[in-house]
Image 1 (tube, rainbow, N blue to C red):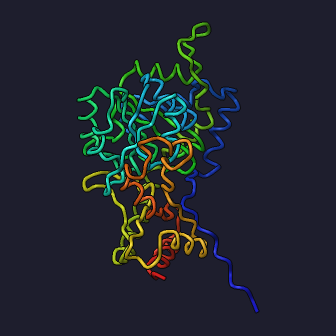
Image 2 (cartoon, rainbow, N blue to C red):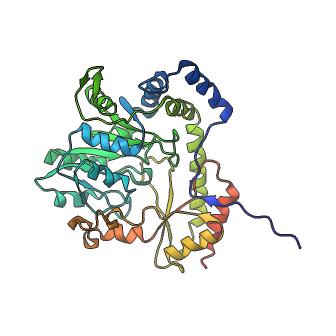
Image 3 (cartoon, helix red, strand yellow):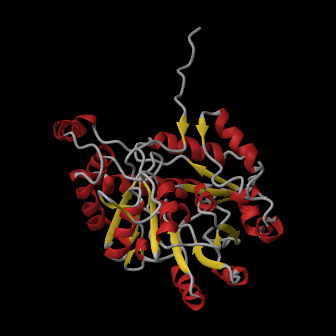
Length: 374
C-alpha cells in the first residue's frame, strides 16, 4: 500500500529573492572593490534609487528597522512620554524603552486597526513629546487627524512604516507624512534586503544628523558630535536592495492577485471578516488579516490549530498585545479596560499566508479549510 504524497507546509510568508545568478555580479563588484560598508557606492546608489521609487526627498539606510526606530527617536531628541499603539510588533514600543522613553498606549480604531485619533488627545500630558503610530498591515493611518493633533499640542510624529513600503496616501507616498517615517527591510517584509531598514525625512539637515547617529556620531576622523551607534547598512544589503527594486512591482501585482482571490473565496463565509484598507487608500498587500468573529463555529485559536494540522502555518498578528508583555503590563495605559478594541481584535485576528510565489492551489486550500467551518 503506497503512501499518499506529503503536501509541503505553507508558511505565512516567504522571502522575495531575485535569481541568484543576477546577484553574483553585484557580489563580484564588492569583492573587487573591497568596500564592504561605510557609505560605499552601492549604499549611495540604493538611497537615491529608493528616493526615486518611493517619491520621497531623503532616505537614510540603516542595519534594521528596529535600529532605525531607535535612531529616529534620537534624531528628533524625543524624551518623556510617547503615545503609541499596543497593536504592533514589539519593536515599536521596545524602541521607546531603549531611549528611556515611557510608552503610553492608546486604543485602536475598530475598522483600520490603526491608532485611533479620537483617543489620542485624552492621553496627552505635559510630559508627552511625540506620537508613534503604525501603518498597520500597510494600511495608512488617519494622517490628517494625527497631524492636526500634533500641531495643536506641539508634538512630533514618527510613523512606524515597517509594513508600508510603497504605500500611497491620496496623491503621494504615505511615507511623506509625519516628521519621520521608518521602514523595515527584514526578510519577512514586502521588500527585503535580508536585514535592513531606513528613515525617510524631509530635509538634508535631519538626514545629516541621522547619518552621524548611525556612524557612532562621527562627523570626520576626529570629530564626534553625538553618542551614536553602528547602524550602517552593508554594501551587500544595499546591492541586494538595488536588485530587489527591479522586481518589486511584479511582486506587488502578484500579492494583489492573491489578496483578491482570498476575498472572493471568503466573501460568503459567515463569521469571517477580511480586513481591508480604507476606501481610497493604497495597499501593498503585505498581509492578509482576517477576524474570526463569534458567529464562526470555531474560535480563532481552534481555527489556527486546524490550519496547522493541515500544514498551513498562519500567524496571530498581533497577539498578544505589546501591552500584555511583562515589561509593559504594569503601566496604567496597558490595562485592558483602556484598550478594549485592541484586546478584542487581538483575540480574533489571523494573518493568512501571502507572498508572491504562493501557489493558487494553496490559496484555494487555505480558503477552503476556512469555508468548511468545522
